[in-house]
Each structure stands twice: as structure tokens, then as C-alpha cells.
Length: 389
Image (tube, rainbow, N blue to C red):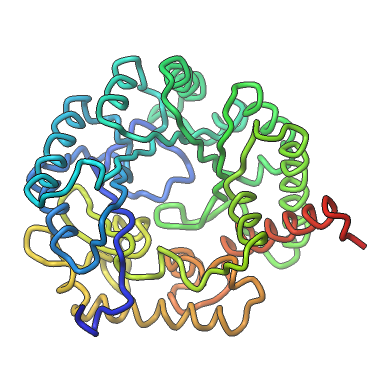
């Protein structure tokens, strides 16, 4: 491998945007162009795959995630053809179909039995965006005309469950959800939804202000609410072992029970994640960076899949500037933060949107998603092991 790209990759995730369009208008969404109906062409799909497979960053397999818009607003036949194209490209490289694992993140509102059959025959893994009970979900996740979407999402979840399609849920935590830990846990338990990840509402992209962003005077009270929320969710998980698994708890528990610590993340290491939008523009680092425009950098696209090899992207001035700044931020985190081994230096997008630079350190995202959750998990483990003072 060229020494200039040593330490980059390997590709673990290829994020493809089938369309920027979304049938919902969630008030915390970071995507700026949710009304754009552009669709990824199959020529661009094949070009994106070729760029990964020809690169020195390919090491045998990766996940292809359909994301950044609502992937089910394109028709079922799109995924049937896409799967055939993926398998064709792999065959030309002498690679088995299992080299690429497809996944998608959906709001579930249009899922039917026919969609479930599509997921099954194309081996597509499913993630669902669902913010818990209706009174919380419908406060933020609405249609373009302002109508609630919880009932439609639950119909989709019902189809997944009846058809035996496994799925995981991502639930966005806003300030109004922090006082309802019992209602949220009860909802997931009642509906047999076992695998849940909590994403905090972030200041990012088109969402210029998070409800979890406060002034210094209000900060202690907000952090206290967040901590109590996580403590109660931890308790509910322990009351029903195996019935409710929280992504954040599982990750920190795994690290705490091993000698392993994070030295970096997929989102701050070049070409572990490759992102391609519906027009073929390509980037790396955080997927959330690709679809936005900034005064300082313009877009975060480093090239185009039809014209640029991945190794050539790394030589561009824009990439090198972003990479240097991200690395500087990671090193500052390493030198200053006791939680570094649990986060590996964080995500550049959060640093950029909160501080205007990639070489910053602590973010709201880090404080809520890593530090406060780690305190709750480690305290809970100490109590269970009889180590608490």
C-alpha cells in the first residue's frame, strides 16, 4: 500500500443514497434536501462498488447501507435490480455474494408484506427509526402535511414481525423524552422490540438547534434528567434480561469487561466508511457530512465515483485539510479526556457542527452519548458486582 494512505481503511461500510427524498418531515432531521426525488442510477451503483473493490482499502467484505433519505420511497424493483447488479459486479471480481451485506434504515411507514418479501429474497437487513410511544414519536416525526406517523410505522413493524424479518430500532432522544423512561421502556417491551439504540437529538446539518442544547445555567439540570433517564432504562433492562438490549449499554459493557479500548473510530479514520450520494459524489468519514454545504469547505464531497479512484481522493487538498483537522481533534481528545478509550476521539461531524472545526474536543454528543452513559453503566456494573462503596 502507498505509504501516503497507510492506516486508512479497511472499508467496513459503503453508504449509498438511493434518493434524498423522504415522505416524512421530522423536525430534527439533518438532511437539507428531503424534497429532492433524484434516484441513484444503477451505473453509479456499479461504479461505487468498483471503486471499493479496486482500492487498497478492500479487505474481503463490507456492509452496503441504503441511507440518507427514505430508502423505501423507491420501488421494490429497484432493490431487486440493485441486488442483481451487486452480485454481478462481485462475480466479475471472482467474489461470492456474501462479500456485500445489504442493510437499510427506514421509517417503516410504507412497509407491507411485499416489502418483507423483498427484504427476505435480497437478504437485506432492516433498521427502523421509531421514537417509542405515539405521544413522543408524533411530536417530531410527522408527514409533510404535519400528520402523525406512529400508527403507520407500527403497521410496518407489525409486518416485519409477522414475516419473521429481524430488525433493530434507532430512537432519537429529545428533551421532552427524558422524563418518560418508563413509558419508552414499556413500549418497546410490550411490542417485543428487543434491540434499541438511542441517538440523542443533534445539532447537525439542517437541524440548527437541538432541544438538548442549553446554556451553562441550565446544563446541570438537563444532564441530571438525562442521567436519570439512562439509569431507569438500565434498571428496566435488568428487570427483563434479554428482552431489551440497548446498543449504548452493550457497547460500553463489552469494553468494560475486556482489555480492549478504542484508539479511533470508523468515522474519524479515512475510508473505513465510504459515502456516495444519489448523484455519485463520494466522501469518507461521517455519512452525515456528505449532503450538507458549508461556507468554509463547500460540500464535503472529495470526488465522483465515475471519475475518481478512492486513493486519488486522499491526495486532494480538501481531503488533506479535513483529515489533518480531524486527526488533530482526535489527538487533543486522547491527551485530555478520561473517556477516550470508550469513544476513540468522537465523530468529526459533531465537532464541526458544534464548534465550527474538526480539531475540537468535547461535544454535546460526546457528553450525552458517551460520558453520561458510561457513568451510568459502570456504576450499575459496580453495584451488581458488589463493588459500590
